[in-house]
Image (cartoon, rainbow, N blue to C red; front, side, top):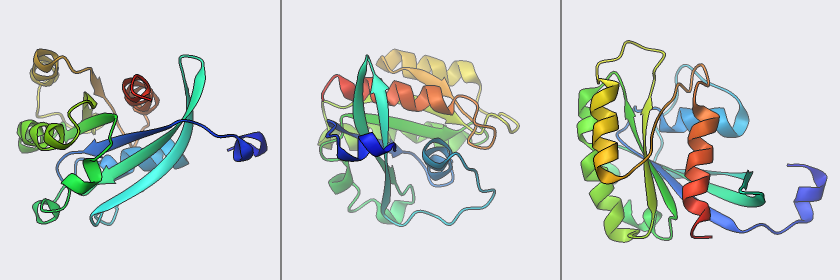
Length: 174
């Protein structure tokens, strides 16, 4: 943040990054917000969040990026973290079919609490050997009217585009 941004007030857009544990959600957020990648990460406990100012359609907004733990044991209280979300990224690991198949459960869980939120689907870890065909994920996302993107937190491929898409989805409600 530049010194002039310290004193400015920006509209806040709450965005949620959700999906199965191990899909790379935290790594994507750290790559975007801090420009770094760590090969091994400690699992997110409950929720974590970062803030980043972005420009969307010629205006600056503050993205409040919520990193939701993907493990089942956190499911009983996750819905409290979804409230007020304007946009949601459903992230799966392209090397893990189950993480893709579980996206429908994530989408339903979140849509109950944040019915106005815009969604996008993100296939992560494209630097590794793909198991989930891109066409299958694109088809599923397209059938729901969600943008589809692919990323690698490790190489940074697609990361900027992903978060700008998420910001655009959120900006319509801010």
